[in-house]
Image 1 (cartoon, rainbow, N blue to C red):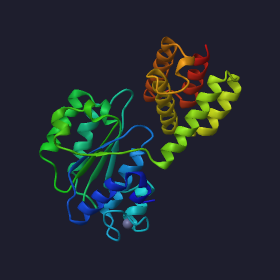
Image 2: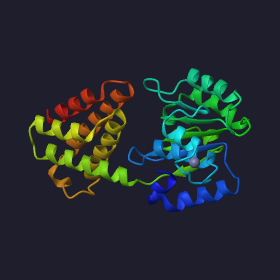
Image 3: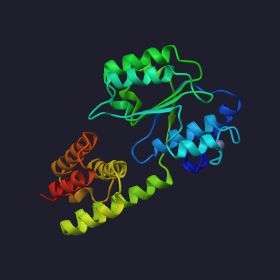
Image 4: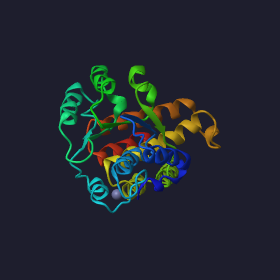
Length: 268
Ligand SMILES: [Zn+2]
């Protein structure tokens, strides 16, 4: 795998490799990109690039730290993600005490998923750590849109903006297929079968939703040849339904149920 797999972000990964090789590892990064950008994988690859001694700046995939990160059992890497609708103050507080522990390896690392959803209190708490970072610690905030974060947080992080990856394009293609069967008025069962084929986890369901929303938004602003076939109110209704499904997924509703429900509602 390694960072090289993000070839659509060539300039960015070259820049990262160069700075890590020069010993410049920042204490906090905002990794910004939509659901199709693969930012979770990118964050893991960045951890490898930071820790790997065999291939600093990219990661070798073979050494102990690279393999442990791939398997999700690297001792000094901490994760938090939205608990329900948001990342809460208590979660950041717990993370802070974890990061204060002495690492078993060279440094502690943290990945904050859904960083956009951090409550203001949680962000203000995190700010203290960003202002006075613990020695060697690297914190990665995964964000759809960095503007959702407090300016004081943004100014203390290096932003890495991701464009879509090959994996993302695959999912966008799947979203187009699903859009097409909905558009053609195919039966619910046909649509459901296509959905199940392309969605094996909550994460994939979120990516598909982003893909679908992108198509409807293109139609809404008239950048899609199918725009003239739809009334604006109809498209807005569907976009709202997609957003509702996304909220359901964040609230830990079963992803298959949430997406089936969405398809039914779009049809209805
Ligand atoms: Zn390695």
